[in-house]
Image (cartoon, rainbow, N blue to C red; front, side, top):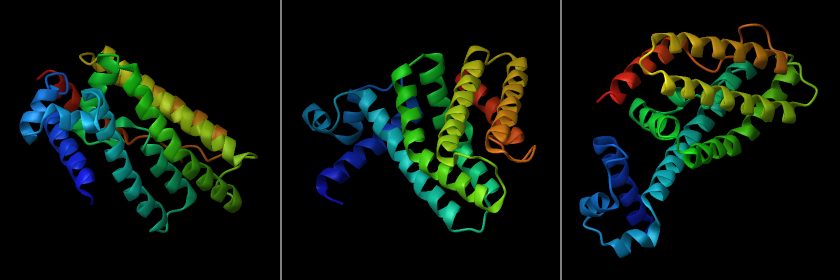
Length: 229
């Protein structure tokens, strides 16, 4: 790793640690500089704002997950349905992120309403996942697991639907984090999404999923507790 790349990585490491410890809102550029003993000039050589740092942190985390995902997809003997579920899980905030980062993103994007960060993360997922989803649906059509005349287009539509469902679920939780009924509404939304997804790809009932209900309930409860701190 070149010196400039190392310095940038160190900056991202320090910023991510502070975002977790102090919270994104309470972390300033100066806090990041103090943690590294870096000058403002050094910081602005790499980033023009704290928001740009968070975008870079998010991109780096996504790249690491996509590397692991590729290994899981092609380093195993999973069939098309299981591969599709693995890919679609990446559209679920609580499936693809550890709890602390997911909670931070929930607050920033859906409670504080940072639409730019929300759209940025959506584009990352769509750009990376769409080719994989199309390939898996094509494999499923070939072996009879799925029935779709236009796998490439259907794959993108399915992923867009999954991202929309995740965003709506996150918005529900953000609006009603203290309301237990919000979880019921969210689960109903996800079940409706599953029915639509299976119709779209011609998959058997109950075979396609975006989330693990038990894990999602646990993550939601833990995330709600973190938001109150």
